[in-house]
Length: 255
Image 1 (cartoon, rainbow, N blue to C red):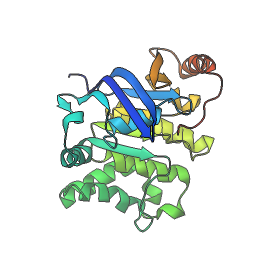
Image 2: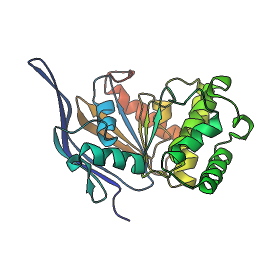
Image 3: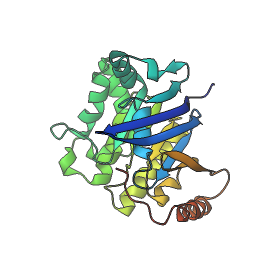
């Protein structure tokens, strides 16, 4: 299987009056199929901008992003919308669930929008509910369950259409430590058992330690990369903390 994603010399500029800000500066990297990649960086480092470019919700100023043979930087808005629907899954800090639907109905809705047959929707929903341990709350509404359960439902909704890439933007930001740990274990399970390719932006070293590879951004550029390899998660966490100490201490949320 070829490389899933290639990012080649990508730049992103924002203009505010006469002032021009370079949010992403000649960034290049690849994401392999089935990889769990993390991106870290201080506020303003460009990590959220980079995620938005991969998510097709923002366009590059220069450079190219390839999903296998598709150069998404060349697609029209209509083509991007179709590409996004068929290939990408999203998990956000604030869940983005519909409060008027049960957890089960939220998961089913993602498939209904792709006009899948009822039997397929039922079977796939059942499988995701079982995988992510949502059986006891499947008929509850989002406001009736915990933040961790809402986020696992968001995971199920994002994965139910088998996206090529799952994009997660600070997914543990609104969770307590126990719920965050369960969610990250869920990511690991989706990555290993379902072959999900995951691209996660985080400022949290503990969350990043679940990844197989981490890119560190500073001033819009990649300044370091860590590969977990055969290290334990505890050993990998210590390495991450060592790299973060070079950036000036604790990281904050990206703007």
